[in-house]
Amino acid sequence: MPKDIKLEITKPALLGEDFGFFTTRYEGLMFWVGSGTPEIDVHSPLFLPREEAIDIGLRVFITILNAL
Image 1 (cartoon, rainbow, N blue to C red):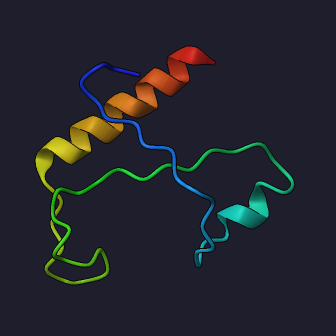
Image 2 (cartoon, rainbow, N blue to C red):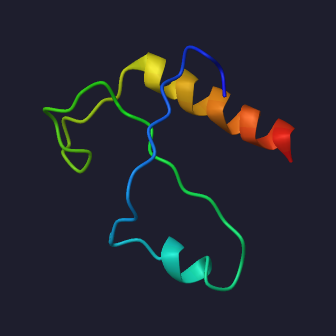
């Protein structure tokens, strides 16, 4: 993981995602990237993540892919 990215391991969470079902059949990984806007819900029409969050998410994906 890039040293300037904070990794926080969380407890498993029950969410409304089908992803959990798919991982019972196929290997998978899900991670959250903080948006930098905690006061606005991700389902709000006002939600707009900070550009830095997009860059961080991309860098995490690249790091994971390079580790495979």
